[in-house]
Length: 269
Image: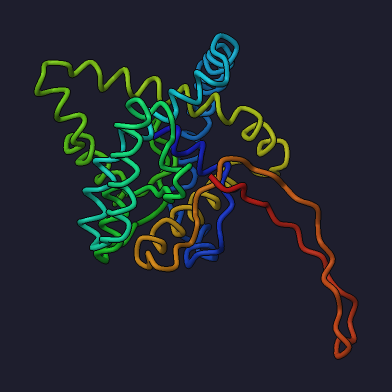
């Protein structure tokens, strides 16, 4: 879940319905900021140094393989949520990717699905509840979990026990594998986004507010994509790239100078 926050911090998605309500949907901001600062201290003094060591020890090809395996292991959980959301097309994509990567990609080490032009998407029970019409509630910052809300926090707790891979590991007395999977996933994601997070911190006047806003945008884009699978919102990105401020070209009917706007560009997953 920390890795989810980090990805959200790096994401730039189309404006969603909660964008304008970011500030008003944070009634516990004073408490949230305290927890956020603690989380960032833990990241600074533990996760970031470990991630840097992880990246220094392992070559890129090995780290890529580990990331591919971890993402492939999410396949059964994503398929379950695709079905609960009533998205057969997305279920078919996930099923195809999972089978190809598992059997032809050496257990997921090689992302054969992407080479076969099968798109990847994420899905979780929080998104499923949103598709069913359950509201998110206010913005919450949870210890270690970071950006969340009551709906997604409860959904994560339920999902952690219902994950098919986790169930299978526990059934074979290999429950420790779940902790290994979680720990490696956290470090892998942090290692993938060291420069992105640093750049986001440097370019943000208020890092807390930036993370909150990007979290809502990314989360809303995920949910809209699940609601409209035929026209997905492409919510995921893997890096934060603050682009230059483009100048709007005035038309003949305009009498005022063109204004400039600055946006963040999202690099596709």
